[in-house]
Image (cartoon, rainbow, N blue to C red):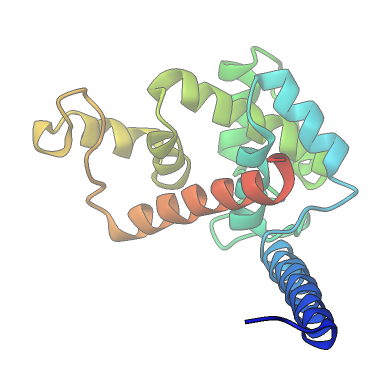
Length: 193
């Protein structure tokens, strides 16, 4: 079957429109995903600095900020957690003295995004050094070190490699899943070519 010039032009136009709509659809989908997993221009240098100082992926810090405070640096939760990384005054004291070997500081400093991010990153880094598995880090950040250590002592909850095979607390398990999803999304949206 012979194609005349009119049909060939129409076919080429259809292909061009399809490609154009495909790019437009991808751009809209990416914009929607970025609105659900945002980054703040003001926080970019602070996240980069804290991640570099403590050897963490930036994606992990963005995921914590998103899931902990929704980017609200002045947020105070009912348990007294403050700021972007939702650190309690007790955690801040522990991070200052035990993790970083500094003098204890006023918890009022947690309202400053740079301070909150730095000390939150220090805590995340210390948890990663302790557990070496991101799922356990996220669980400990949410449920506490003592709780994760209890789970780690239960052989029924461990894989043969000594990792938690399941998290028995549904809230903690859901938090870990949210963190894993957020880290993956931040990686795909902002850090992968």
